[in-house]
Image (cartoon, rainbow, N blue to C red; front, top):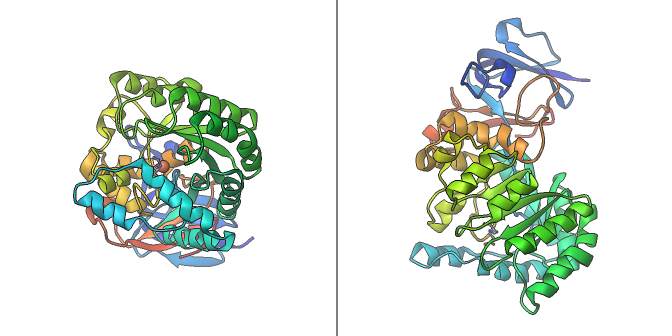
Length: 389
Ligand code: NIG
Ligand code: FE
């Protein structure tokens, strides 16, 4: 198996708890090196101690971080909703009803069109340092269109999520639609999906419907995650905690009881600050959550309606500037905690035996991700040990 040593790393973020100083999150090393063997990390340590390898790369004193783990995206869609965004920026509120616009365009697209669109977005993400990615369906909302959306997504990631319960499509009742989602649609989707998700919100699905849909998914072998408390207060976060779901995403409107439930559960609160940026909603209280002991992840939510960014660096910058996360908390949330939100421990950390997913930054420190917002800082990406950027 071929080996590569990246040496001359001025600052290495390992996220390795064994290397973290007390109170530290990132397991930082300075003047470090990493050895990659095949698709895995073989060695991490000081550059002066690095073993020889077949290929040597000099980082030139720059920083290396784990690849971003983007645990929430909706990439399978067709069409454009920039007019909706423009209207929002001049005073219209965000409406989840726009989902139906994308559903019509997605249903009209061919498999090839959907696949090439997802490929373009995945390449865009990779170029910005994302090496692990979750992709949801949710713009098909028919048995055929949900199944083919997931088949497209599965070409790009193992972390595929069935989101047939995104909204109730036109021409059906909520009761009939929940029966479809938990019956024939689930049967067609399950072979292509690892996860099941529900948009639990006023105007989408209530907490009883969400419970029934997640239970049906679980019976078909799909693990649960939830969209909840995005647009208003509600019981979704507490349902996610009660069921011990891997993650509950958005968490913008939380009661003190929601925060306690999160603190006392295994469920990760995934914050999606690109959404608040793109909808002019208030940001979630990341500082309050972290100070209360809640485990927080950051993800892009890349989708055509509420947030069309693919940039995890932007999410980090927003989390730091607008949600009072420290740069270290934000980077950890975008890597190791994103992995935890997907029930994974093989990515998001640079330690022997873990996936060789690394990003070389054109910067001396990870802090530049927030310090230089909007600047493309990714100088190189290795995914499963292969240089891809
Ligand atoms: O996560 N909240 C529900 N779904 C997406 C938005 C979908 C859309 O507007 O197209 C979200 O924000
Ligand atoms: Fe979403």
